Length: 350
Image (cartoon, rainbow, N blue to C red; front, side):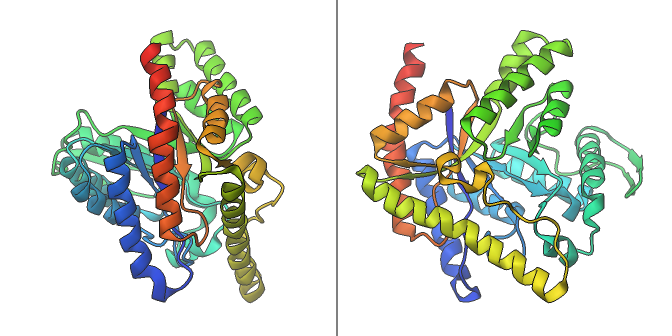
């Protein structure tokens, strides 16, 4: 099982943005040095939920300061991007990183109406735009004299440059929030990113994913590769003792949810418009399901329960809410030095 760091740093105010961005770059470099498999980047606008905002430009910066870890999006909101511009940007980053890029795509947020308002995009178009954009990306990377006539774009280009470093193109992975989208990826024989779920739901989804691929006639080798490339998301905090981890980790996990909810409710109060309220009772907002915290031994035990489900990797957020940089870096270091090696031993033995 692979381990990654989902860089998702919140900034409490515009005055803090530069500091948080600098700290996140340093965390990326530390992650690479510690042996993290992938650095994942998010995309959120206008609210400080994600300080660096744009995963595209941030990925290019990370590619220049890291050497071995892969760089992925979890995810780029494709309804907010022109697909040809995005294809060019991905080609550049794929070349800069020498093939370390994972192009993670999603339709966009289900909660932040202001993301769409700021880009003058109808959120009801988001899924259709994602599907059309993904088709354009693959064809633009692999087809000369490409012409596309679709619902949202009519395009013609002689040849996309630079050519991608990865052939035929960088790997694409789709985020799946629900069971229906998971089934869609299984039918297409593709890996996916799973949002925060309880271990019980995670197992149900993975079992359904594997069985659906088999029902669609995909061979066992492809199924194994797709499972190996599938990631599940958890928030992580590791400290020397369980008590310290619970005290710090749980407080910031709760703070993270509350700050996001406050921003969305403010927009509702000011504009009378909201996309969807985030239910505090769903798994991703409940510490017992969405947060793994404790001493290295306790965290290892909880990670082992995820490994038993058979997933490719855990997409882990170490810095939650307005957590201090020092606390996040300490948690990351403890995990990679004292938890991750336990699973590397298991893999070597197998």
